[in-house]
Structures are given as C-alpha cells and as structure tokens.
Image (cartoon, rainbow, N blue to C red; front, side, top):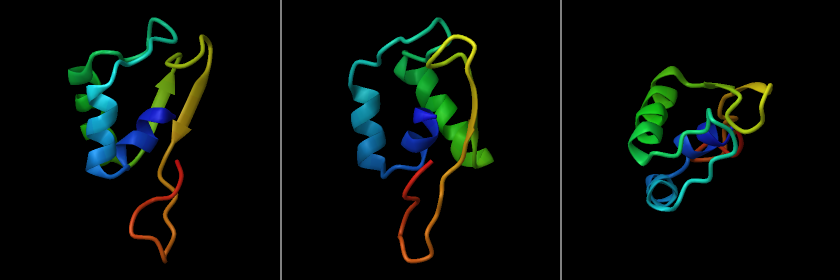
Length: 77
C-alpha cells in the first residue's frame, strides 16, 4: 500500500522517499530506488497498485488514491 501513497504524493515527497534508505520487510519488498521508481511510474499510469507479500508474508492488497473534489491531490490510498 505504501507504494500507492508514495506514487500519488507530491514529487518532492516521492523524491525524498526514493533518496532515503528503503526498509526491506520481506523478500518481495522493493528496496532499490530504480525498481521503486519504475513501479511508481506504473502505479501512476494504471491508477492503482497490487501488492503481494511486500510488507507481510502472505498479505495481498490493492490500493488506489482517494480523491476529494475540494483537494488538489489525493488525500489517502
């Protein structure tokens, strides 16, 4: 889920995340900035993220931005 939240965050936030050390939670967690950057690009194109085992072994999630009419950007994912 964190990838969807980062994907739709302002560019400055995305760059801050990508320039910081990325924590590995499982073998499926993306920790290479280039890999996460590519995944973020795909998420932004598709509008959602499917995560399997990225944060917890055996966990599956689908995340998409939640937009508010009054907000200039999504407020949750």
